[in-house]
Length: 292
Image 1 (tube, one colour):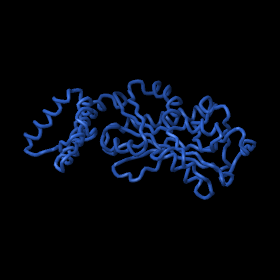
Image 2 (tube, helix red, strand yellow):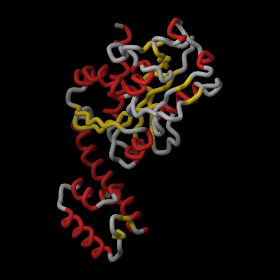
Image 3 (cartoon, helix red, strand yellow):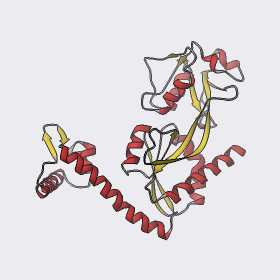
Image 4 (cartoon, helix red, strand yellow):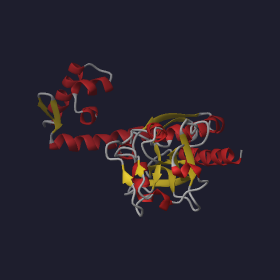
């Protein structure tokens, strides 16, 4: 499985905490045992044979079930204890976690969260492969086969403009006010990019073709420098995060454009009680934060 994921004997060996010759010897031993080649060995390239690909897929299911046995036993003792592998998309994690981490530690002290950050596509791949227990990302997820989801919160967008921009003098803005503006967006792979394009789809905005940011923080700085405008989600503009010199944030007229953030997990998981407890704690923590 490591070799299939890494496509490189050295990296796969490091991932398995063995030397490269040891990994290579074990792969050959497995091939002799099965009587079939699993790996095509070429200079600077590793590929799986058709048989190798099928073996890897079955191996993933075997290891998922093996982990599930441990999880069943652990869950029987205490469903809200043990480790839980949680991944968040980059436009959610840095802004959600500071608000909910204290509540999670307080309400679920026996639950150890192993936190990861992936864009939506890789996150869902790892979730389906059993490498993650739950993902926090924008809904809806398509397709949902084999997955379940629950809404955590609705997040309005606001408009970020340079402080010298014509819209900086407004208290509120409308979608039509974006006509002919230069829109700065994240690079491909970020769902927020697609959401921003959808919000602006019925007005004539110009996407900056020579620049696509890798993070919201870079977008924020580019707007402050006067290179265009952008849409930011609510949690990313609240103080102290949103305090950027040269940047002004303006809310949209009601009802504002928004996105839905939720938790997604496999239907077959044995950790549903822990996942639902986390979801409930996140919702409660955000309500408390908003009421302060």
